[in-house]
Length: 283
Image (cartoon, rainbow, N blue to C red; front, side, top):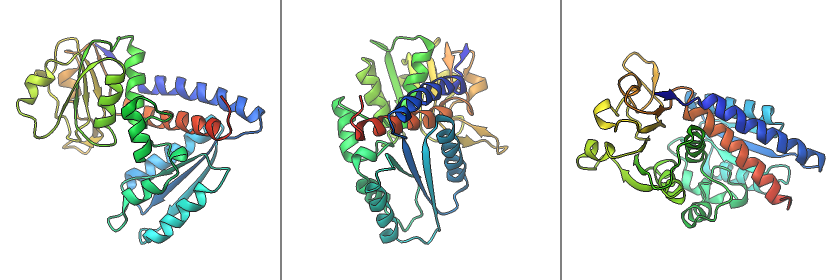
């Protein structure tokens, strides 16, 4: 069993982004990212801090808008409109989930697709479906980088994704399909789930249930990617995979924390870099 070091792979991606950012700066262009956060959700606060830190590491210009919980849809929309029109800002990210009274779909649809570095806008989602994308959703793109780092060729392999969210499950399946895997998507209504997951050469768990995947659900020698971020019964951070139980059964596995998490942010940096190049017509 090999543990896939998300921190190391993420650092390599960020180093490459920084190098390309320095080259852009020499041409008079600095990639700019605006992050919007509404309310006081503690997990969101941590993510936003990490994104600010990553921007510094990569040499980006960044702006953070921390809006109060009671911000109205009209105020939020107006901020998005202003950032859409701001040439210093190449990427706009609105941290989800938003407080209940706000419509996240309305915000996502309002962000200019060219600046949608989360790749959540319907136009970018459609491009992923067609395989003609500029930006990839950060978490699934990060997962593909982690699989690549193992040296395992995805082509022709059976991949099973547990979870069908728009943010991870569905785009994850599309990226695996584009890489020539044979893909099956499973979810909470799937019958005989363990039978299906046991057929997977590559198993991606993104279901949001602590330690849901146990050893009897994993094929010997499988690559196991854990996208989950949960708390166990002792309040300790854990994934969707029961790591201790599963680790000796697979060839590669990602830990939580330190697996997929760091990748999500480094892929966001890569998307922002791509956005800066696209908007300034730089190849």
